[in-house]
Amino acid sequence: MPNLLSWVGENGASFFPCLQKLKILNFPKLIEVSLLPPTTKSVTVERTQKIYDLKLTPYCSSKSRKFILEISSGRILNEGFLHQKHLEATEVLNIRGCWGLEHAGGFRLLSSLRKLRLSQCNMDGEQLSLCLQHLTGLASLDIVYCQNITSFLLPAGSRHFETLQHLCFQDCQMLSSLANLDSFVFLKSLIIERCIRVKTESLPAKLEGMRSLNKLSILHCPGFQTLPSNIPLSLEFLHLTGCHPVLIQGLLEKQGPEWEKIAPFSQIKVILK
Image (tube, rainbow, N blue to C red; front, side, top):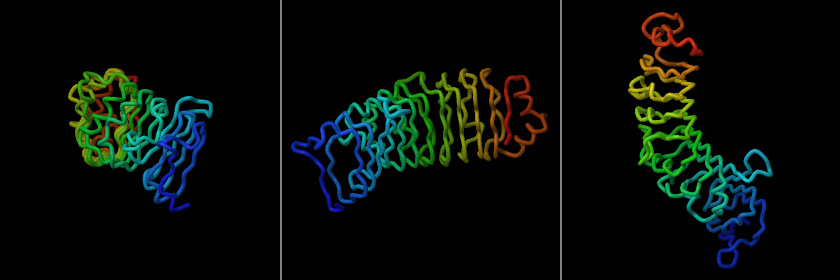
C-alpha cells in the first residue's frame, strides 16, 4: 500500500482502541496517522511523510510501564501521534537528525525523562536551554554533533540544575564556552570529546564549585593545553587523550606545573590513553 495517504478512524479515532503493538514501514505518502491509544506498548514507524523514523519500546523489560523513545524530529512531541501517557512515561529519549527542536513546548510532558541524547540536531544553546527547563528530573544528557551550540547555558530561571549527573559533548565543533557548569553542583561525570574549540579557559572559572564532580574526561581536544588550577576535591578520575602534547608529556613525566596541580590529590587516578 505505498500510496496510502491517511490511516485515521472516524473523527480522528484509532481503528484499534486496544492496540498493543504497531509497525508502519515504508509508506512514503502517508501524511495522517491517528492518535495512539494508551494501551500501545511498542511502536515502529519508518519512512513515512509524516514521521520518518520513530521507535517506542518498553524500558528495561516488556512489562515495564516506562518507555524508550527514539525519534528524528522534535515536532513529533507536539503533533498528536503519541498519546500523552506515552510522553509522560518516557524515561529515555534519543533524538537524531532533528530540525524541529524550536518546538520546545513538546518537552513539557516528559515528566519522567531521565536520559536524553541529542545527535545531529540544529538547535543553538538558547534553544537547548528552553528544552532543558522542562526536564526537571533529567539525570543524563549527551549532545553529539550539534554544530550550532557555542555555549552551554543554564535553563532560564534556574540557580542550579539539581538532577543532572552525567553530561557529555561529542563532535560539537563550535562549542567554546562551558562557563555555567559551576552551577551544576550535582554533576558527577563530564566528558568532552572531539570539541576542537574547547580550551582550559572554556571551563568555569570556579571549577571547585562543581563539588560532586567525580570524573572529568577531555578527549581529542588539541587546544586544551593546561589543567584548571581549581580542581574539585571530589575528583577521582581524570582522563586526558589527544590534548596538547606539552600537557600530556608533563603528566606522563610527573613533573612540571601541570603535574603540580594534581599531585596533592592522591585520590585522583590519571588516565592518559
